[in-house]
Length: 290
Image 1: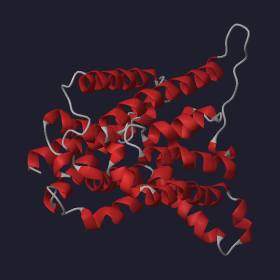
Image 2: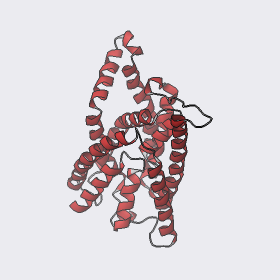
Image 3: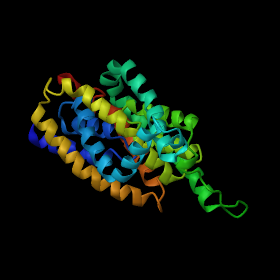
């Protein structure tokens, strides 16, 4: 991998990690369209450490409060009813599904799941799911002629059951094209949570999963055509761009719909199917070098 490739892929990672359009799919597609080798699951996981570092900094006050309350709850019974302490446990509970499924399906994630036809399918299907969830949220928030405005749930109403459902939604993102934020936000909206609450928990829930995945893949970073230097460079690029995207996205969702992302996902999926169907793009483009 050249330094230019690592710069472009780091930029793509930072731009797409927090938007509901799938960073892993875009890394895969960028390489395929440019005629580069697939950067692979290890490169994706490690560059995600950069974007998660952006999450740690952006939500540092929330994270510090949650971690502090959680540790105090281990020895202080009165702290166990504290919302921040409970959030610490709920992040742990919600991280279990992706941890178990990630290890179980590791070979599939690094192989068959990276087929461009599967990515096109997940882009379209999850785009439609996000669109439905967004419409339901908008209906509750705006009401209508014969419908009163309905208040959506906040994170204070999050329990173990919903935490696990969020976790299973996040685990779906092991398949490129699904999108970690897209799946968890869609799940949250369908369960009745507000856009802001679903997005905030989605970002917090991703921290242990992404950091663990990145550390787990460190051993494979220097294998194949991807070397340590370009990988680290791409990780720093992803961090800087990712931080800017988080700040923009958290403001965007307070007043805007997810529909632009829905339309983009569906159009990209259709285009991908058309290119593969026409023979202009191989469903395994770039995989030969692994």
